[in-house]
Length: 103
Image (cartoon, rainbow, N blue to C red; front, top):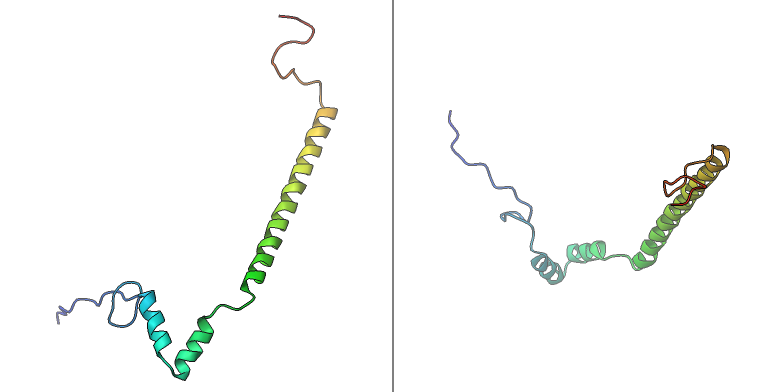
């Protein structure tokens, strides 16, 4: 048995269409439906009223946590460099020249 029927195209949109859904068409159809289903879908798809406050709160906490971690890492690094400088032998001068000699 040889099946010569091509496979159906991948559908992302409404049945019978290929490709992504048309957002404007979906919005018009949703507004045009006066029934309970349309009202339920509109209520479900509408963003909550406090979304701005919740979003800014989550972002603020995330940035504060990241900032706290960065400051702690910087202070730990500073302490390590300070201890290394105090406890190690006298390092070579930064300019590469020897001390006590003039060019």
